[in-house]
Image (tube, rainbow, N blue to C red; front, side, top):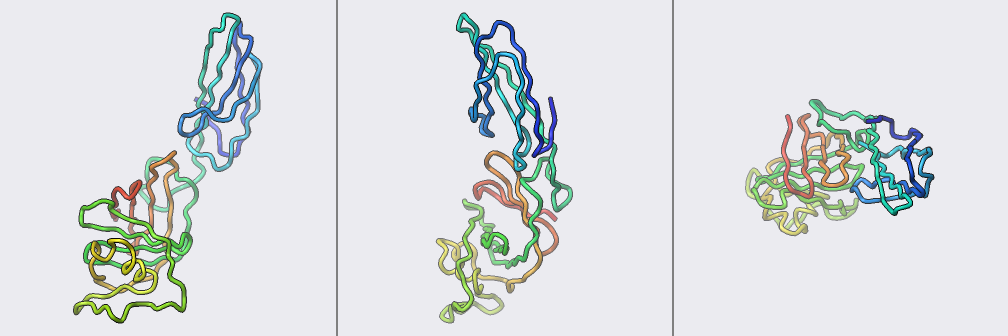
Length: 228
């Protein structure tokens, strides 16, 4: 197979015998036919690989002869991965981009935890009670100046009511409070990092944990685990 880097311009070249008409297609990551060009049965064409492309670029050529018979050929160009993961041992696949380093927060609960990062301004709620979804993601809708907690909610001794953005999701997110229980410590801020795989769909998210490990979040809220 041919290899190239994202952002490269490559030259596609082909030859056929007896063809009278040809069409070249770029294949979408899903495998569906995408952009197409009417081309000569034998010829060449330059193609600029988008800088954001990852893993591979695929093309298929259809050639028609005078008897209306169609022949086809497929080309896969493997893309060298331009980025590295922020942790090791790393997944055996290319990330979708470089790591995003940003401010974050983490808080632990009786039955899970919450994560926040400034870059996305999302709150990840991870449950450990074995039910689905295993985690949910919420937009952080708490703003400075709003109440930080509900004074009418009094936690048992040694436990905590979460505050600010975590508290808003805990109180108002459907099922969050019932599934998480009370906080067992206070929210702690730290510098975190975020990266994702570069699959067509069903991507995995990796977030640096407060203890220096990594939270691995599976596709579609399906599962999560802590990597020390």
